[in-house]
Image: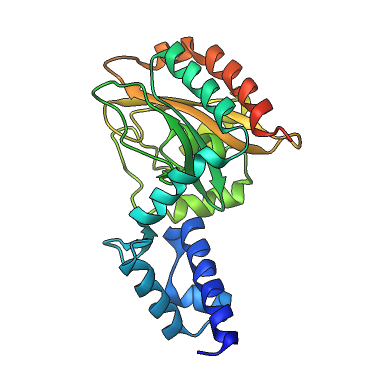
Amino acid sequence: MTDSVSRTSPRRILNILEEIIIDPDNFTAKKISHKLKIPLPTIYRHIETLCEEKYLVASNSKKYLPGPKMRSLILKSLPYEPNFTLRRSYLRKLTNDIEETVSLSIPIGTKLVYFDRIEFHWPMQLNLEAGDHLPLHASASGKLYLSSIEEEKVIQIFKNIKTPKTAKNTITDISQFKKELKKIKNQGYAFDDEEWFNGMVGVSVPIFNSKKELCFCLSTHTAKSRKDINDLKKILSIMISSASNLKKVLFKD
């Protein structure tokens, strides 16, 4: 193997990983081959290697998702981030105050990805971890994020959703969904009332940067048997206050 190929192959693998992680629903080998100008057989060869090493896994729909090794690396890297301890202390305080699991998620491309999570040990809760994707149309944080972007992008994302109905109250009509996003944008927070999972409710509040761009969503989801939407409304002020504290940490130099 020449030095040129040696230098190029790792970079190609990293580029392929990046494309898949950012937008796995729209990933195809042909698209990546065209975008990265890499021969299709090479793409398949690299994907095969990534799957063998468990950095990727193949889904039933012939798509590729982050594998267990990739997710493990994400989790192990969190403690080395700037202000990790302070960020975790605010999240842990919020968890104790509301007695529910809380999560931070971030938009990456057209996806919303779990960034951090502090659990409150109830028997019934969402089994998620850093690196997992949230359904944009069904989760409180997903809807909150979509309310912050252009309507044209929202419509395109909505059309590309493969499993629109995830629970009994999932909004599947685009006109109704646009009304929901308008309401969320006006009020500044979002609820999920059995739209993601049956028997689960959630609330999410935004964290903006200095340019008023939504960069993080702070959320909690819980069993409806413990808290309903009215109960979640009662903890909104605590969530918003925590988001304000987290903003100082997340954007600290």
